[in-house]
Image (cartoon, rainbow, N blue to C red; front, top):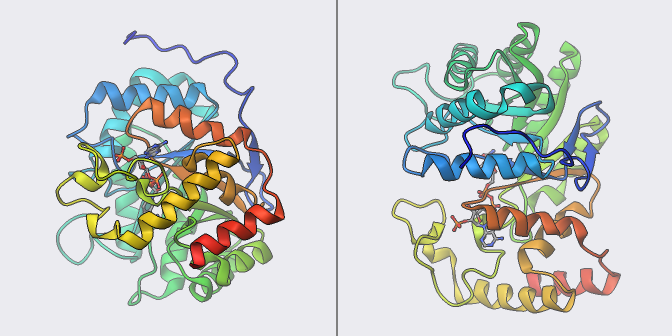
Length: 332
Ligand SMILES: NC(=O)c1ccc[n+]([C@@H]2O[C@H](COP(=O)([O-])OP(=O)(O)OC[C@H]3O[C@@H](n4cnc5c(N)ncnc54)[C@H](OP(=O)(O)O)[C@@H]3O)[C@@H](O)[C@H]2O)c1
């Protein structure tokens, strides 16, 4: 790998950007998450190559969280190292997000949604990434014990301090989102985005959340849009070595690969090939057909996956019949 990185000149030519709700912020239709594949256990040169390839393809949005690793914090540290080496000159072309909300350090101030935790965590994240500010700071999950006003005021404070440009929430259900957004509106916080698990296999956002976000002028970014790899052709013939499902302590438990699920994946895969594309590409295009979805937030363990997934942007539109066929498969 060349030590000096010069971003590809035509990097904006093939990416589409979508406005995040009614805000001024535009995000690429495909964004890259660093939850996995950027830890201390992953080859640094591979992580670096993935980030370079993403930026060269017009991906401007990179999603992190305090706890991404393992160990927690290492994804931010590795991102910080790569940022210093390769991306410093491009800071104003990047939208970098981080979050706080899950267990991060011992004691009562290292988890959930108190003002103490949220603001201390953001300071730690900035140090790990060697950044002056992040573009989006999220509350990673609702905290049942902290008043939502306190957590939202912490997000607002992060913005007023200049340590974040925009605020976001993640994993809040429709009602919790309504309450959080009401507080943020009162505070005049630049709240722009909700990060939610959304894929063909996880459609809960369709039961209210997407409407709440649309009404409040916020965007939705869909995380795990490939259901961690299930919505690709990789598990059709078993669990390949090195795949997420093959790892110990994995977030993709092999018992999720039920016979029923694999049958669905098989049928979806056939439909995708009739459409002239891969299942992964169809799964991403299917999410992006709804304009309330600002971006799909993918993970990738290699450049080939990334370039493969980017081809979702060339998808032909879905016919009504295809939409119905997909619903039939998913509801079978
Ligand atoms: N807010 C939250 O609570 C939350 C929670 C989870 C994730 N997230 C965010 O969402 C991001 C994405 O999540 P995710 O990694 O679960 O997303 P995903 O895109 O559903 O899954 C990514 C994984 O699928 C496999 N894959 C991707 N493209 C493939 C292809 N073309 N062919 C075959 N396999 C392919 C790879 O797994 P292999 O390793 O098996 O190759 C890859 O690591 C995270 O990085 C994080 O930023 C947020």
